[in-house]
Length: 309
Image: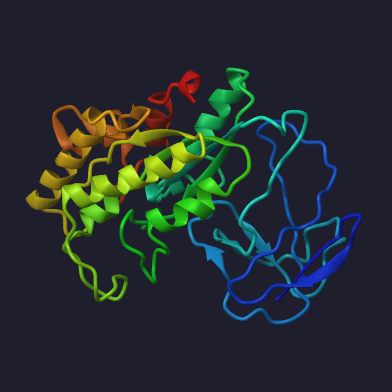
């Protein structure tokens, strides 16, 4: 496919299937929490598109070259997914410092259940808190709905222990990573179907915690602080059972007490109903009974100490 941009060094590049390209630097003044709109033009058919399903922000499409359009009237198609663009690197006066916090996780990091267009994910709330605290830190949301720590899937992408290098270690300026993975390993532990490889087998507490330790070692090897997040209540998960709950409790106990992480943020405690700890607090859960709603994500945000990042 061909990637074009309309900056000072206008040109084009051909990106092979499965490849990636980094665009030229553009001098652009931005403010904290400001939204950035990026327009892409493809000169020919791309074939199946790389996309982020739970984008939660509207992407607009139109045929033809509209890079220089000032008005939006040409864009008559839309989606809440995002396509092709994986991120924007931002640099400035503090570019030599480590000032990026990466949130690595599944749907609870991706923001499933939050109100589209409202920027209600916990990472959005965390960015707002950091601005209010005058902390010069950026937040990168590396959440993928359905993502698992130990199992790659044709539906949900690479396993966390594999994508950790691309999504955390190879990003510039990372100082801290919040690891929120493992809920789908636990919830889908005995699942079968087209989204799971034929080699998919139930995993143990030891295998999950060894996966965590591998991420921690890799991060510490780059001087990156690692914060572990406990697994959220899973009663609304398809196929939920007593075995699922027992495994979740064992994994959370390890996260809280092992001392392997540099710090722990208790997503489970922030969301759980005190009267029924295996399920979310009623006012904090989306209509699917599993994912947090905006209030639930705000509760997670409030559980994070910005000074510890």
